[in-house]
Amino acid sequence: MENYKKNLINEPINERSFKRYIILWFSQSVSGLGSSMTGFALVLWAYGQSHSAMSVSMMSFCNYVPYVILSLFVGSFIDRHSKKTIMLVSDSIAALGSLTVLAFLLMGRLSVWNIYVINTVIGITNAFQQPASAVATGKLVPEEKISNVSGMNSFSNNLIVVFSPMLAAFLFAAGGLPLILLIDLASFAIAFCVLLVFITIPEQAQQKTHSSPFAGIAEGFAFLKKEKGILYMMLTMALINFFSRLTYENILSPMILARSSGDSIALGIVNACMGAGGIAGGIAVSIKKESRHKAAAVYVSAALSFLFGDLLMAIGRNTFWWSAAAVCASVPIPFIQASQNTILYRRIPSNIQGRVFAVRNAIQYGTIPLGIVLGGCLADYVFEPFMSSGNGLAGILGVMVGNAAGSGMAAMFLCTGICGFAVSVLSCCNREIRKLN
Image (cartoon, rainbow, N blue to C red; front, side):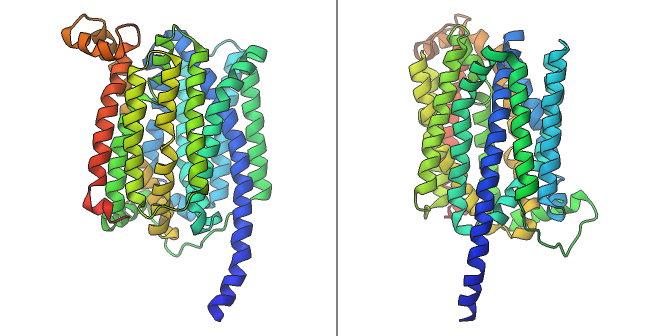
């Protein structure tokens, strides 16, 4: 009877917390739309300046490197400080970056290296903001709704992917890059005010403090040493992220532009289709029952994404096939995220989630900068020259991916499709990972 009464008391609190999360989710999605439009416009701008895949790769590289390095050290800081304050300060600094881009643009002094510096600063803020946001989600969302929330996040993120290129193109034609940056700053202001005024994130008193950031790292790794299945999952996801960043979030835009004679509309359609696939997957995750085989769902979904997404993207020669590949690649992604998040939130104690999530970010996303830089280098200096060299092997590959501009990057998709599929299947067979089911 006593437990029953406690449940009656806690239920309304859980419902109120979840409603607060819905408000936070919506406002952050609005802000994400503004940031995504700015990112799309800047990619087109940077590629138009240099016509180099490497210039686009370096934009992402400068964002990820500080994020990965700092992720190792911020965990204990996040656990010991207000998640709300961390999110507010981090978002404010990121908005200041957009304001700086606008200022340089209006003065006629914007260059690619300015964007590299600003992306580095944003990467630093993301190292604090993302783990804090992850912990805040665990505090606001009831455990049984974590999987559904992952679907909601995938839905909103991919809805942004669908509409931001089209909106960015329309707004760019109407008012240029300054208009897009102003809308980005306005969307930030909305999200900032909502978080500041309407959102209360429960904080848990910390009984133990850490004398240095290294103590927090040690505690995070100590937990993972005991939870080998989670550690192996992070390591294998790091490898999967590496193959993904070699192509999709690295050379996809340059490849589409190269193979379509610089058609930005084709690129926008492909990005929109990728977002549409993610929306479909996000909706499915939001409404479906939780999988009983969560670890298997992670790797089966990843294998399908590589098999149908990357391989079809490699052999596609027009917007229709690139769009079909984008849908195939993106539909499984929400299932990966939802299953992994459910495992992590249920196995990691709430009082050390900041430390473990920070270490997770360093491990799981640590391969992304390498994939970004290596992808750009391989595209510009290895695969593109090789496919135009007249080599016998290049001729064989050319039957599948063509021999025109962008064929080398298409061949890279062929390689990542095969490697990513193999890693996913082998990971699913790992004994420690299978125990997570």
